[in-house]
Image 1: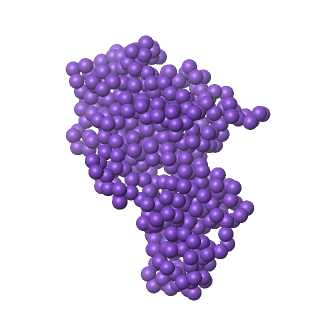
Image 2: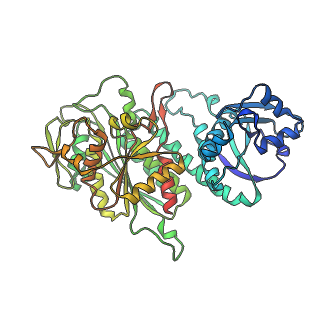
Amino acid sequence: MEFSTQTTASLHQVKTAALAVGVYADGVLSPAADLIDRASNGAVRSVVKSEFRGRAGSTLTLRNLPGVSAQRVVLVGLGKQDDYSARTHASAEQAFAAACVAAQLAEGVSTLVANPVADVAVVARARSAAIAAGSATYHYDASFGKPDRDARPKLKKIVQVVERADAAQAQKGLREGNAIANGMELTRTLGNLPGNICTPTYLGDTAKRLAREFKSLKVEVLDRKQVEALGMGSFLSVARGSEEALRFIVLRHAGAKTVKKGAKTPQGPIVLVGKGITFDAGGISLKPAATMDEMKYDMCGAASVLGSFRALAELELPLDVVGLIPACENLPSGKANKPGDVVTSMAGLTIEILNTDAEGRLVLCDALTYAERFKPSAVIDIATLTGACVVALGNVNSGLFSKDDDLAEALASAGRESLDTAWRMPMDDAYQEQLKSNFADLANIGGPPAGAVTAACFLSRFAKAYPWAHLDIAGTAWRGGKDKGATGRPVPLLMQYLLDQA
């Protein structure tokens, strides 16, 4: 989708397929809606008085208003004016998304009129608007035999109307938001693809395609023999149960060389580590059959790394970023891990596998050890790791775990700014006691109590050489039920963090 800005005070003269303006609850018009109302001799107020109450997220499309050049005027409900301002640009994004959905039938151009929000930068509003547009117009049909092309949104271009002084900042925000939306689209499509298509090999090929498209990216895809040579015994043990070949994907975005002379840059690269279990049956500790199909989403951590790399490469961010993806399946077979087995990790620590369905930490731990060679300034792993995190936080917040206060706050702040929120969870040393084993250096589970916390504590054993944080996205990476599908989270959070560092 194409994004651009237009500076004009005469909104009623803008020739466009659809013009979106805000209406507050209780009949209060935004300045833009008021201008259109005056140009149309009160047509907007008449409709608002009779049938449109301005409920947050609601829309109503008016056609061929007298005195207005736009083919359609889309009224967007903003809720109560005081609440709208209190929610900062969250409401602006939600309202814009609703407007996009309502305007999807428009052929060609839809013009957004962003309602000014106190204390929120123009660039942030524009970024949020572009992300919302991308989310609203996403449509999956990759695995349909005969895709319904008519079902695809027809919205092709968004023009944001801003004050002349704000045009440059708005364009910057639209560019950033569009790149993030493109990254989210890749992440969502990878997550939604079935496990027989989106295999570890497919993830590796996707990384290679990104490297061909963007010159700033370099990629290396390691096979089983190369992983064996590295001594990744924990990762290998999970992959052993499947006939599908494992892949260890290493992505590099070399952006620091583009930094202007004298600018501050991190001492080492930022490393993103994504869990890439392309299907998780639980291994010998088999999962229940109901909703097991959703375990194709167990690679959403890997998908979010690939989506983030697509976005940061499109934006050419002046940062060195490394992506690590251990990818395999977790299936039951005669070669699969058994409860009670002991494996040796790349770090040399032995692990007693008490539950083969706690496999994500077994592949991530070796990737975290591998990350040491880059002497990173920060390492963030992203994983659909535990059902316990869903119990704790539901589908609203991702779980954020870190003992580094600065890194934790930077990620939490990025989540708040991007509306892709995370909640910091405890990591007291006392939780480590639950991982004790009589037969190995540590066990891979700590029992039912605080399951998400003990999973993070397990990973922390392999991340002592650098500032580290863990994002448990088991509750936020996808939705189930009738709206089943990947969400693209936490690409907005990760990209906001990277933008902040850049």
